[in-house]
Image (cartoon, rainbow, N blue to C red; front, side, top):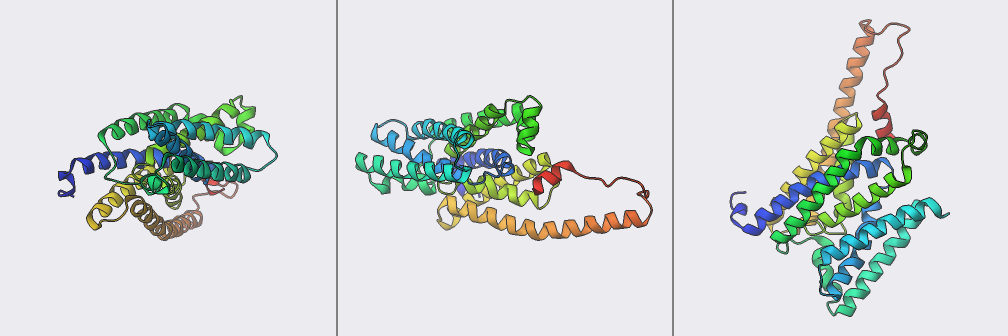
Length: 300
C-alpha cells in the first residue's frame, strides 16, 4: 500500500474508488429493490453513445456520457410506463441502440473500437485530477439525493401502488432513481468500466442482504462492502498489474460468496435463539408473530 501511495495517479484513483464504493451500492439498493438490476448495465451501454459524441466533437467524453445516459435513463422510465413492452424489452432496445451508436460514432472519429477500451473496462492510468473533481461533485449530488428523498424512494420501492395512494409523485421518483443510476454509471466508468459498473451496484447489495434484515442496514452494509471491494480491488490491480474493473468485481463476488456462507450461520443461530425464547415462554400463546416488514420486502 505504501508503494502505491507514492504515485499521484494512484492517490487520485484511491479517492475515486472510495467515492464509487459509497455511491454505487447506495443507488443499487433502490435499483435492486425495484427488480431493475440490469438498469445500470443498460445505461452503461447508452453512455457509449455519449462518449462517442465527446470524442467526435473533441469535447469531454465524460460530459457527453453524462448527458446521454441521463436522457437515456429518463427515456427508459417513460417507455416502461407508457409502452406495452416490458421493462426488460425497453432496456434491451436502448441497450443495443446505445452500443451501436457508440461504436459508429467512435469509428467516424477514426479511433475505432480501440478508443473505447479504457471506458469499457476502466483504466487507472487514465484517471486525472480533473476527473476526480467531476466524480466528487457528482457523488455529492447522488448521496444528497439519497439523503433527501430516501424515505420517499424507499416507499416507492416497497409498493408503487401504496406510494401513489400516499400521494407521492411516483413518476418523478421513478425518473429520479433512473437518473441517479445514470449519474452513478458515469461516476464509475473511468475506474471500473461501463461493462462492469453494474456489478458494483448489485453485488454488494446482494452480499449485504445475506447478513442484514432491514432496508437501511442493508444499504449501509452494501456501502461498506462497496468501499472494501473498490479499494482492495484497486490495490490488487496495482500490485499484480491487472485491469482495475475486473479486479474490483471479482473481489466483490468473493465477498458475496463469503456472505452467503456467513448468512447461513447467522440465520441458523437466529432460529435457535427464537426457538429457545419460545421454549422458555418468552412469547405468550396469543402473542402475534414478530415480522420485520423491511426484511420481508428485501427478501421479495
